[in-house]
Structures are given as C-alpha cells and as structure tokens.
Length: 354
Image 1 (spheres, one colour):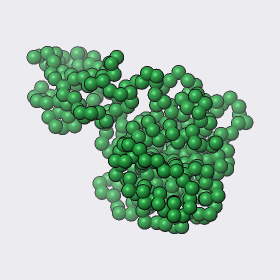
Image 2 (cartoon, rainbow, N blue to C red):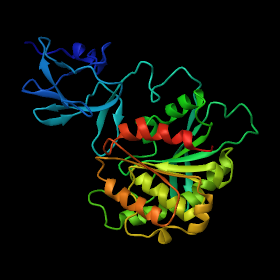
Image 3 (spheres, rainbow, N blue to C red):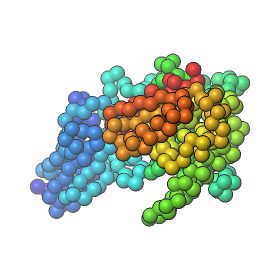
Image 4 (cartoon, rainbow, N blue to C red):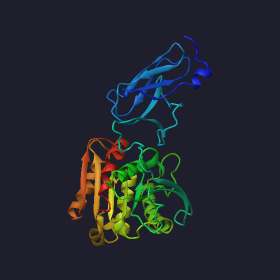
C-alpha cells in the first residue's frame, strides 16, 4: 500500500450519506495506525470498522440508518479524533461530529422548501453580570410583513454544557418552527435563546455553590434585563398569557425556576430537566396562587433512561401535592438531543398560545 498524497487527501469526502441511508466515513491518519473505527450514537452496534485502502486512507460504511441526526467520532487505536472533513459539530464538553440521514418524507427537523424565519444575534448590556451577554432571537417568516403585528414569545434555554447557539446548531429549533408554521400546526412566534451562564463557567472543578449562584443570576437577568430588552426591541405581546419558557437539562431547571419566581410566563416546559431538589414550591414561587391562576401549561418530559429521571419524578410529585396543574410525559430515551430535538420540542410548540 502507498501513502495517500496530500492532493488526494484534500478530495476525500466524509461523511457521505448513500441512497440506501447508509453512511460512508473516510479519514487519513498516522501510517502506523493499527485500528480505526467510527463510533456512532443511537446505532445498534455502536461502531463501524474502517479498513485501509490501497490509496492509503481508511474507509468504512455503516448499515442503513433510520432518518435523523447522529453524533459520531473516529477512534484511532482507541484514541478519539474528530472528522476534520466535516464542519458540523456538537460543541459540548466532548465535541462530536454530526451527520444527517434525510427522511422520506422529510422530518420536521430538516430544512424544507417552506418560508423561513430569521435568526438575529445580539449582545445586550446586563447590570446583573456587569457585562454584555449574547442572545439569539428567531423571528417568524411573516414578521416583517405588517409593522403593527405583535407576536407571542418563547424563551428557549440550553443545557449546562451548551451555549445560546445550541438550539439552532444542533437542536434545529428554527427549522422545526419554520416547518410547523408552514403546516399550520403552531402559531407564529418569536423565539429567544439566551446564554444560560450569567455566572462564568470556571476552568477545572466547579465551586459547590456554582449551580445555585448561576440559577439566582439567571432568574434576575431574565426578569429584570432580558425580558424588558426583548419587549423593547421586538414586537412581542407584553403579557404572561402570550409568553412561554422551556429548556433542556439545566435550561429546564432554569425555565421552572424563572416561571415560578417571576409569574411572567403562562406556559412552561421542562425537557429532561435539572429540577430543583432542596427547595419547596413555596421557596421557589414568589406567589404560588398567582402562578396557579396564570398557568396555562406546565409540561414536563423525561426519558426512561435519563440520569435525571428520579429528580423529575420527585418534582412532579411536589406539583401534584400542591395541586399545580401540569402534564408529565415519560418516553424512551436518555439525556440526548434525539429526545429534545426530535420529540419534545415538536410536541411542545403546538401546545402554546392556544
């Protein structure tokens, strides 16, 4: 076998989705490598063995996969490597490549030939953090047609290891909204995606009080800074009945805490949420009776293999004991984007502003 030339290496394609929904992966690596695999999440065998070709690169093809988005990485002699020919990444603590196997018909998470909304990235001044904070805002397709029309608003919050771009880069929230709006199954709405770490993430080990300090700062930032900023800069309906808040993992805990503390949101969601553990509802709620009166939807969903499942069970019991009206859904799945993106957000959006 000969070593692959630099020119040939530049023209390698990886990943390549084939007509039968299998995926071919290709990579170049050290000439001394003995074993190259691709580790793919949510697949039956979990990995694909690559073989070295006569041209000097490694290649392997998966079995046909169900339509959807998959995370993967290379394992070279047991060491993790990214696919440097693929620019699509999940930016978490452990970074993974992403590949999409399209559906027929197209899935709600795919980019379809429908009118599309617009993503706006901003920085706003926050006295809470004494800094500028990023926020991503989605406006629906008809937002610019009528300058007098106002829209309901959803605050969509990310998880601990993510940032404000996660719900669009990995979660496809903007495309899901586009497709459901085109199908006339949801109302057009503005979607606000803030950065969920008003307390800066430390390098190395977290302080034991990081979570509580971050929760407190997030509530204050959303209530006193971001919500007024959104109302000033976007044509949103300024009343709780036209506001929703939801999120995944840490963001699900944030959405629950913010809703109970502010009484500013009549629709609340929590996906695989890091629910409050020590506090009672009376501790969390500024005015629990007012929350109950304004509550139009409190929707909690969690996978049966999620490490936060028992935490959600305990919080759901608190709501039941306090006669807080809510819906609880337990599905198959673990703590991963295929649950939040493919199932929960498409189910949650049609329930809003009805």
